[in-house]
Image 1 (cartoon, rainbow, N blue to C red):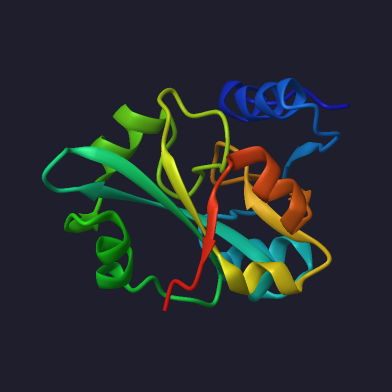
Image 2: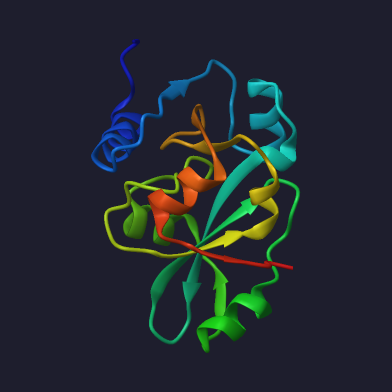
Length: 158
């Protein structure tokens, strides 16, 4: 196995600690966007599980929505579930609260606990791909793996 960057290694370690037999790979091409990731991997953009961090306004806490790469998150829907307004987090907030950069935020391995919601559309695929700590690192998993790894609540994000 090739040597992983420190951020990708943190994700691999988190997966290992969860008892998931999944392998982080670093690719030569960027996987920053769902379209980039799909092209680099050879899957559809819908199979990309993009981890989006939002800031809960009143409590200043992070919330993660893991969405199918072709879907947009309806922020009002998430806010309704939380009972608080949310907004897209800026790069500094994402880095400070998760330890990762935008474009490489994985579903696991964050520096603080992050409440997580999972796009129900991801459940239709046998395999999906998630970011693994950098804009060049990914790992393949199943929707069941994602649920197990994150403890996230499956919802409609539309």
